Length: 70
Image (cartoon, rainbow, N blue to C red; front, side, top):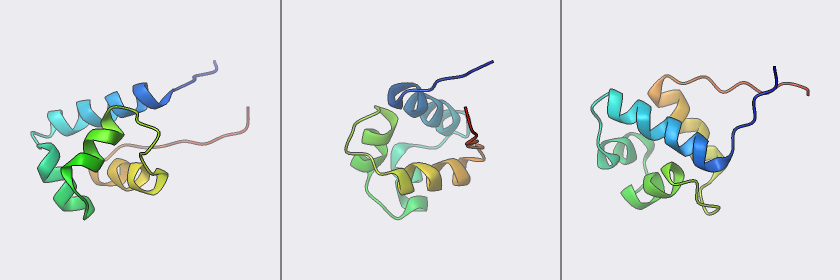
């Protein structure tokens, strides 16, 4: 089965996990060493969101990112 995840769906996963952990955007931003606006951009799938921030957020939230050959 091939799973395609776009930026908006990826951001929604980040947001859902953050909320499950009862964290605010400010809480996550503090853990990541960034500002709330960057977390909001990531969660909304904005093109301005940085990959490094997304990967750090996944790590901090206990999410796994898998990359494999199609």
